[in-house]
Length: 170
Image 1 (cartoon, rainbow, N blue to C red):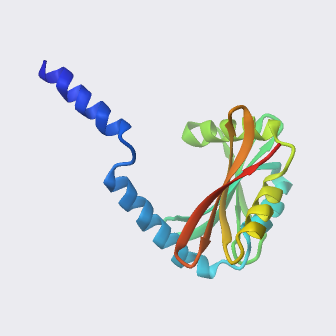
Image 2: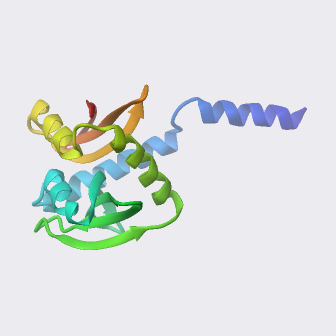
Image 3: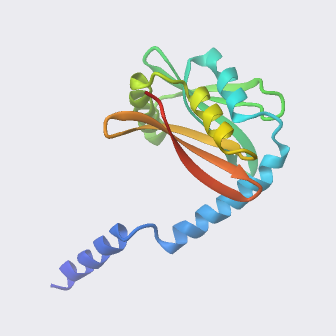
């Protein structure tokens, strides 16, 4: 009996939305990213174009990795996936690494599925979101499927204010 109550409480907690600690982590990550972006000379859209030398871009994001700002683009070439790191000051490819396992591979496969159905590029979606949100900078573009249709979730920032918009890819 106690076990089923504990399971019910745990399930309720997990299904009740984002826990407070996760919201704090996200707020901390956003603050860290907003601060680090002041060093970025290159737009995410430029990073998408630069990464195309390693395949078709299937997602892109600015992130703080080990305390350093990084522009990371996932690409697909044939049946393989890569993570392309674009130098955020020059716009040139800094390194390319094959994605072969784990959560990164699962994410790349899901993003690729959405992009197979897309008629618009991620660059086009990011450009459109930036155009519609004057003063904001695109920091992430992630494709997915919504009701069977490809869409891109675009995260933008202005100062320390983040917003997420959805752009159709079909």
